[in-house]
Amino acid sequence: MNLYSFAKGLVNSILSPLYRIEVKGLEHFPKDGGVLLCANHIDNLDPPVVGISAPRPVSFMAKEELFSVPVLGKLLPGLRAFPVKRGMSDREALRRGLQVLKQGDVLGLFPEGTRSKTGKLGKGLAGAGFFALRSDAAVVPCAIIGPYKPFRKLRVVFGPPIPMETIREQKLNAEKTTEIIMQHIEKLLGEHE
Image (cartoon, rainbow, N blue to C red):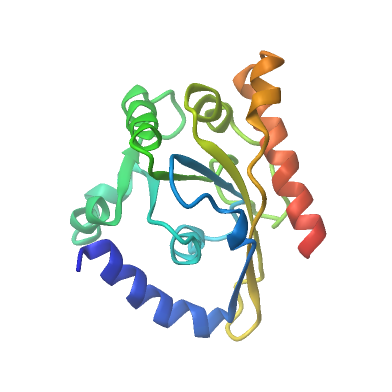
């Protein structure tokens, strides 16, 4: 058993009962091929929660500083995480992200780039649109509906893939594409809150 599968089982056994995690919309998740999974960001626990809820292994970008934390820094690559420099265009992180999608794997992103302090959906950064337009990956919106309070239900909802053909035909830029992705996440939040 690899580190990812072991960690997923371990984290699931702790977080699922603690937050009574309910997962919806798994039928929308493509069984194979590249998937760009875009979720809202309300808590530091979002990456592991999305990771245990998704039916396939998810690679996440993690802020570069985490890779210098003792022990954690050594574990992150085995958990499919790769570093990103925040606040600037990190070409290496963009290249790695596209590589994940081209290999037919799942790339998890929080388009807001940082946690929402209010719990409300913030503005998405162009990175999500960049990955959506530069790859043939299915783009799956995901809503995390809190609160993160022990023994209160936490929901993770996967929506149907966003029809990217239309967006590509309209020749929209990365910013506009991200806006559309954010609208899909907002819709999921509205339907399931």
